Amino acid sequence: MKTALSHIVMLLPFVVPLVVASGQPCAPVFTRQDTLRGSITPERKWWDVVYYHLSVDVNPSDSSVKGSNTVFYKILEPGKIMQIDLQEPMSITHIVQNEKNLAFRREGSVYWIRISNSQAANGADSVTLYFEGRPPVADKPPWTPAFTWSRDRNGMPFIANANQGAGASVWWPCKDHMYDEPDSMLISVTVSENLTDVSNGRLRSVIGNGNGTRTFNWFVTNPINIYGVNINIADYAHFSEVFHGEGGKLDCSYYVLKENLEKARKQFRQVPMMLEAFEYWFGRYPFYEDSYKLVEAPYLGMEHQSSVTYGNGFRNGYRGADLSDSGWGMKFDYIIIHESGHEWFANSITYNDVADMWVHESFTSYSESLYLEYFYGKDAGREYVLGLRRNILNDRPVTGVYGVNHEGSGDMYWKGANMLHTLRQIVGNDGKWRSILREMNTQFYHTVVTGTEIESFLSEKTGIDLRYFFDQYLRDVRIPVFEYYVNDGRLMYRWNNCVDGFNMPVRVFISGSPVNLRPTTSYASVNLGISNPEIKVDPNYYAGELNITGE
Image (cartoon, rainbow, N blue to C red):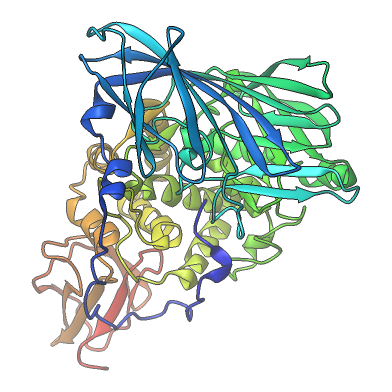
């Protein structure tokens, strides 16, 4: 989750889209730093992250962190210069390999490290990065990075990070590109002995240091996307339960401020409901080995892997509001359902390039309607997802620019959800649709993917060439219009306001009776046998309609 939902301009309800895009926005200007951050440079390509041990001391008194990250890596091909990312004002103080200090230089947010050891292909090595500084303070978390320094009602520190978009390198040194995830990770966080840290994975130990601090050691068994690496520090209360799911027993742990314990016990009853619904639609929860945690944070929430953060005020809706204006959005806690949905789409299936963030957000936004459908019926899910159309801006393409760390439009949420709901109509078989979603999560389980791979998978499994479908909804800002007129009892129809070659099948109600048509961008016709029919596109398709005669 990243788009600032509270700042979205709410459009009028979607009825008939007649406006054709007047032009694309001006192309953004990218810098060398954008390319270094967003591309797989030669200095990244020669080595593969296997394991991180991130060790940090967090100091609330001056909002600083310091520590080390030991990078264990496999050598894919010989290399001498390693790229490590760490953004200002954070800095690397020294770098050690085999007890020897390595030479390095800084270029903006990139550190170029000269490796002294011989780096033979198929070998392995490690390097330890020592760092310190005051990470940026998030003024509008989680949309602005990176740390939130807050306090509970008793004046105790309440601290958390959230850095999607800005990247993990906003506060710790790493290979900050989504294509290369560590296979596992140890996160060691040292805090005052009267506080608790909650991070990803399972708690292996808590060690008292004899100086008024203690260190929490959390181990992540599964591959982890690095923007999901998380610390949460507070005077937490804890409770737990066991969910019996497709993967066996899943322990679910909840960490909240002590003042909110009773509210959390009630509101978090939605967690096993979420797990039941999403395992039905998508298959087993992807991180049984690392558990599921829901952790109160001093901001709205984020999909940190196996450590989902929560700050929705223990109420349903999105900050108490229904994003769909359908009424159904008040039947669930948006942050619990949406951010947990990212365990499947973001944390298990992860985009290779942020330009394909729609893979995370479109499927997860769509999962909200599937949750409603599971518990309240198909009409509930349909009314909710159609209601989300009121938020669509159609301001710029859903896909971003590749290779420069540039994401697409926030429409990846609601337009993306409606794109998938439309695709479900095209498939026309709910059982097949569910099997496709489950197979997708099996085939790409714990995998970094490109948007093209997901598009190709959906084309293959639906048995439909979806090239123009995805060109329309992901790479164009126009809403396709079913254009028609009736002449001597014949319906003349085509797609307009669309990409060349657009050929989406559509269901049209003709005087109340459903008819399946296969329009293209050229006119076709069908004999109706009636002279003045009422024509209406099935509203489950994200498309408009226009009688060009104006009748």
